[in-house]
Image (cartoon, rainbow, N blue to C red):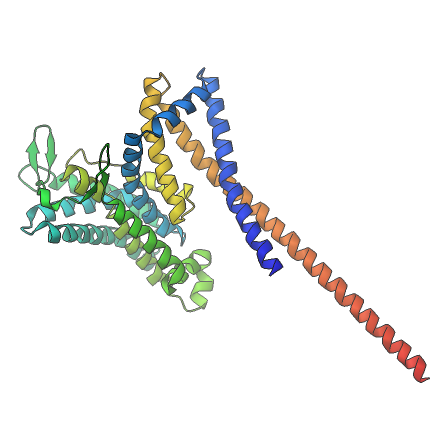
Length: 383
């Protein structure tokens, strides 16, 4: 029991030390950058805290964090088995486009139209990512190359259909798909300032499902086993190829939901002003959150906080690029800090195990020596 408590305490210390080290490092580097450029870092942090804690800012940050979190989970599914799904950006845009087209063409009540839109987005995203998974499993093609190419193909496909007279219509300077009826828009949580998108429920459910599948199912065990060692997983009976394809399908299905907060809570259509780049942001957030559902949630909120406060910093005559520097430094600091703490933890565990083995061997030697002495005394008495 004492050893178990000590191990748990060690894990807790390591878990707290890494983010603290990363935060301190990020603040120190960012402060140094601002000081070199002649800007006051303490005033910047004061402005960020004051503006970021206002009620309207808090709601904005939560709404902004929803697609970031979904994107991070989609990336993390691949990361857990050493797959780099860099194509989340293309997957969610293709999925959102065709989901908007299907939703605008159907004549269904909102209660039925919304599930159809969500399922369409997940199916399209899964198929788009599954292409890369199939090529990886069957031909050994790097998923990094195929997903980058699929990003380009997805953008070209959307550009072809997103034209007046095809699957879109012209509205001023914006070309977009048919507007979804109001009954098809997702519900919202009303607040005193502005509503919180109801798609936050989808993000929470996805996070819970992600944790459960990875930690409480056989597939999750197989996925993590393949990520640790493909030969060992194959030797234990795990089909590596099937796991690769399934992981990419699941990653793509979650990626298909990334555009739903915008489609179902904001725009109601897919146009040439639909947000891009959320997939690449998800990579940074997955790294920042260490692929953990709670960690990625905090990272998504932090990213939203930084983006929200950047506008106020710009109004205070701070360079707009300072937020980009801060985001990059935070990600690099977290990656480096976790690696340093991990290595320190391994060395500490090795030292502890060595000390316990040495103590056990010393005790065994002492007991065997005592046994030999007792045998010698017995022999002398008998003589």
